[in-house]
Figure (cartoon, rainbow, N blue to C red):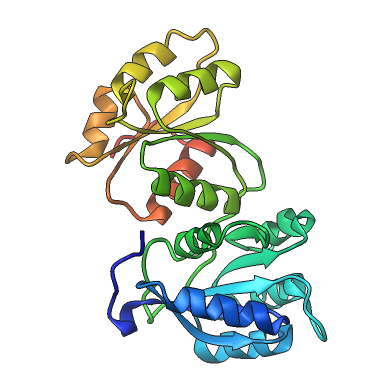
Length: 272
């Protein structure tokens, strides 16, 4: 489903860097066709990408890895990392996924294989932009990257939301898994207990509340739990359910990622 068209000045501004002209043109047309995205410029190599990043300060940079001549995608990431005040959120778009971990360590928000459907790249761009434009008065920041690989289970019946959250978690260095209902989530937990569960309460087949009761009967249950709800005062609801944190829907990805990072870091159990 195509997002509603936002005013041009409010669209997420994207810079595309790829040495293949056909890829650049295809991505430009595809992203410009989205109601909430706007291609600010394209770059044919790493040097031009660096110059345009510093000049235009885009919200998101879609960056190819293999670019010739000049610096490749990882080189561009390293250079931008030294120039934090101007660093956009970066989605590496590559045929060589073996460099994805290195890209994340350098601050990439996500790494998308070129053979994936276009929708995956679009979701990654939106995830990198955290569902909205960053203030023009402050530079965009890369989504925090964790050096560990904690297992995070995302339980929500909204397929698009699952894809976006999974992409963001992957970009942040986690090992995410998805389930569309409480029953599937319970099976996943019995197979391999996650470190963190991101749990919607209104689910088909088995509700979030029923899942919690059943999950706590598992002998190995140990996950910290973030509750997602459209009801007011998510923190209070999470506390009543004995969960760690509550996040109200709709939410910004930064808020959810911060909650997951908080629990992974082992901070005290909080509600709100």
